Length: 432
Length: 141
Image 1 (cartoon, each protein chain N blue to C red):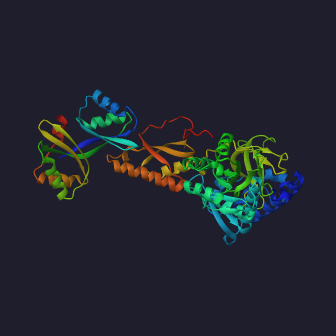
Image 2 (image 1 turned 180 degrees about the vertical axis):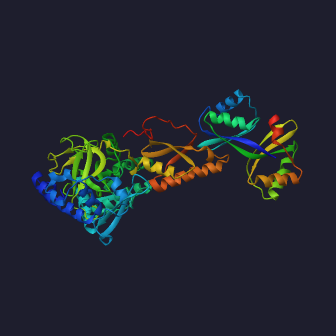
């Protein structure tokens, strides 16, 4: 089923008119309500009147995570806090998270795009949807939750973790749809086998997976092991959360809800738009959001766009699976981690050298992060317990900033290779 | 009455202990006593050597994490109950021990102690006429 046929199957010209109108309105609103953006526009001699349609998009200034950090927590909100009904947060590049605020209308819009996504994946109101994304500051859980309720399907808000309980509910409640990260889906598949549950008796038929990169090989593995159709969903909290785009049953690229999120692909070096169909960095301008509208937000995800009509009948532009990133962000168990965050934590501790090495592994189906840290000689103690306390302190400090547990290994000074050029800070052993 | 102990941080990887002993051996430094404390992540080598200052400098040059710690070296008669007597004195005086290890030398059994309060430990043991080994004596062994 197509949830909003008028929009999802609009002609390119119809879409262009909708986008142009919404873009101009958004630029006006931002200019008048956010001093930071007003200054940015003044600096390049731009006034809201200069933006007349989507072709003028490239005149606008970019927004990055740095802008969000500089305006932490609410500096880029266009409405007073009395209008904000929800806050979410994701990792920033340093110790401070990136905060996003939603008005009531934003939540409705978000629900709408998630409902469209669910329909693209072939979910309908008779389905029982088990949401095993984390609920909380992370947008995954609540994003899927509201969209599923809006569709009218039944929600099981189980959140992430407690895998044997996940399996029990899939079996007992007859869940037909599973939403989680792809690596967690494989984890669930493994536990199903360990618990000797007959996979053929389960009613699962669709999985909606996202929040971390996954390959076509992993899709096939999930589809075989869980006997479902595995659908890729894309989103980032800065733009709205999950539902920015989603695959349809054709599994031929993710349809961007472009009447709300206007996409561009740029060359991350020159910042100029790439030729149509070329790979580059994905940039979004939100054209309906009220709480935190963003102009030309650089996602750092590398992909390309396809504007041809899809076999499913939708005309919404499709983006390919992201091929990588134009920055050094790592996604570990669905959590965004920047090496700079780790560095900040270590620099704030006088006991260790700021020499470190992050090692990412995939053990079985789950990602793990280890960190090698050099111990400063003056803090090296003859007592084991002091060194263990130091190790635990590093683990705690990292966990409170990153939101994931890290296996810390104390190493001898000068163990970590010094390079003349750019230091190698990350070794990613995962084969994605 | 305090003795310098050499402490070396060791990662859990093969050959590291061998390297330490080779470096010290080549420099003509004798190891009188040592112990390794290990955890699943790393180890600590504690040593009493004939020239702790020089040993420390040499290991540092070889990029080991090293430090010198003050410890107490107690000499007990080599007979049953001797250590118990010394430990009883410490316990009666509320002195806790972080770690200890033993080595023998002729007829005497020696114990290297790291108490929570070094001065108090030395004072109490001396008051009870326990025999402590001086650094100068020890390094000549």
